[in-house]
Image 1 (cartoon, rainbow, N blue to C red):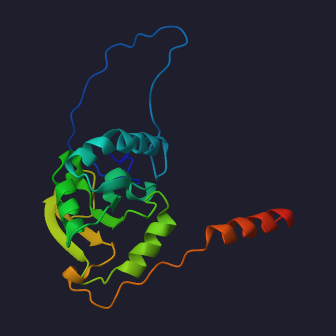
Image 2: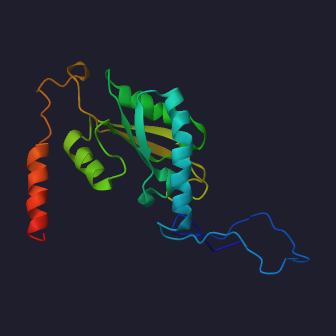
Image 3: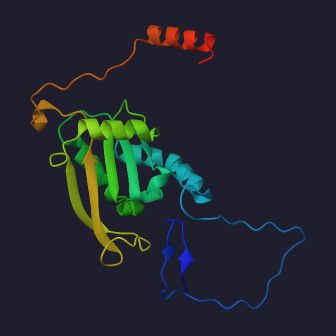
Length: 205
């Protein structure tokens, strides 16, 4: 079979796949045929994936109580990219969460896991990227593992095996070797924010 346009946004190459022989089709009047259209994300299946995250999030929290929220952005095609926020209480807790998630079912296919602080909105990709760039030292805050990979992932040299990357984008603790004093995030006072929004509305901005 193939080439086959898949949910990854690429065509799956020609390969050996199971074959079935169609002998008849029966249907009712005004039949409804459930199907999804796939391609470069976001497509219909992206929203199914988003729903599955909300369904399984309580299960993840049972195993990892420090987890606050999780998101699989469209750009990651479901499992390729995971943003997870945690209540950080001790050193290297981000790595504990990464490895724990990689050990849970199909989360083993997650190529990139980014762990963030609890006050980061993991559904806001711009905010996540801001925290990622500001809070990480590439050599210090990344880890690589070997793990099974998705059969549809064309990047690894061999099918079904590859490497995964974890990024600790949380605030660093003195007990993690950081002694410079972590800076506070610049935030506008809520009264000032409300006043600015009020004036902007009056000015039609």
